[in-house]
Image (cartoon, rainbow, N blue to C red):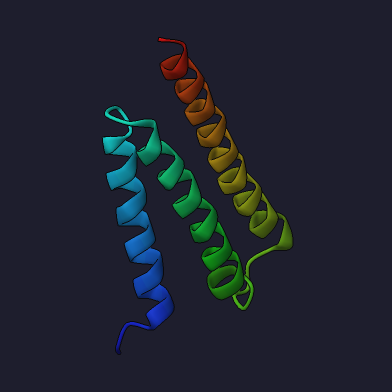
Length: 88
């Protein structure tokens, strides 16, 4: 069975997130990119995977909320890093 394009997009999003988080120690820019990819991954998972599946609504919304919260925390951490770099 061939892998659907949505599956490839989810796989690539996960790989990019891991890569950007590993590079985030070097630059805040990569942390912000990771947050953007996590938001995109949340949308992909919600729309493509969780919407049509027989997944309870609570689990679907919980996973989406956790991913969006992780992205917001990364944005906030990145903003703190930018402000601390600007003060130097």
